[in-house]
Image (cartoon, rainbow, N blue to C red; front, side, top):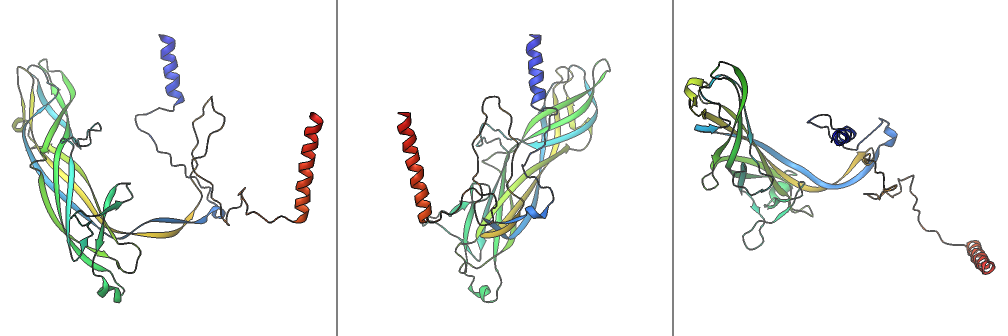
Length: 337
């Protein structure tokens, strides 16, 4: 058993696991020499216009049950810290308890392109999901002036799901011994059937829909966070402990903080300065000596180390040499026989 434990410890050391947190590896390295900087063309998406909206909502929670139970005749002496984070179940992305922000936007001065059945056409965005809508508007008037055309939007944000609240408290038990305890609870914010609804307005500028092979696209994404506090900052008024069972109930005020960004995006081709392609250091394997490449090498007129060259036409001398080689090979095979 002891040898097995030593082997496990050595494996952990070999893997470089020294902390609960980690550092990311990008594979991008550059020695600072401008001689290695080269232009590279990329086909990507350009942000034409963007706006950021911050929203907040308050939720009052009364008599929320927390775990663990503190024991008989325990009392809370001091609240040390209150933390809040959104709940997410990785086993079920459609879990109704996941804290979710659902934005819905309507625009005036333009239209979302539809498929004939009333469904807006969505295209793939930088996230790899179909989360961008095509926009169409009559931009001819502003096109003559060399400017963009404004569109106005009304956004409705629906919030539903739960949050996780952790409270660090200093507890005195029946023998007046003090210990630090972390109380936790999953707090419901709003059900999907009755979410918290907030509305805001915005304006965006779109480019010409005629002077381009692609229609402009509308993208929006939101993130949500939460902040919690004891309702009136009073242990006597907001925290109740059952003297017999040690059950804890707390009154809370939870602030839901939302950031939503709306963008008008157009596909473009850019020439960017690059220091080369990322190269990751692979983990050493005792079995395989070589591994396949994940990406092809760049082969163009700017590549100096390319092993692939354009084919050239053969001259008469080349044909003679090739014939001699074939004859020699046949002669060698004859002698071996």
